[in-house]
Image (cartoon, rainbow, N blue to C red; front, side, top):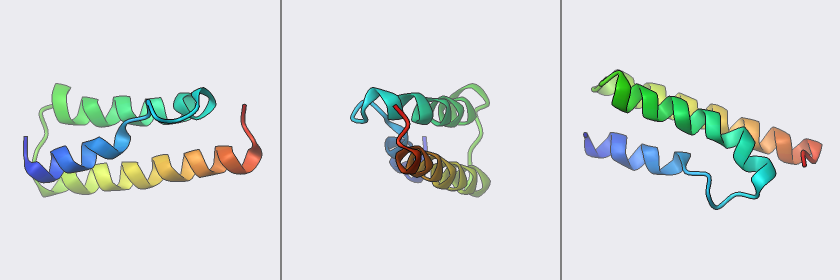
Length: 70
């Protein structure tokens, strides 16, 4: 695995989040792992895809925080 891919994947972990936010974050982690593992993608476009997915995950978690999701 490319070091940039591995470095980006670490930001998809969700064990440290409260359970209400884990349920928001988990699908993004699952998709990131699917892109990297099951589809065996690599290269610059994978890195960009992961970065954009990470941005989306962060926005979803913040939206849940703003709404007080429990």
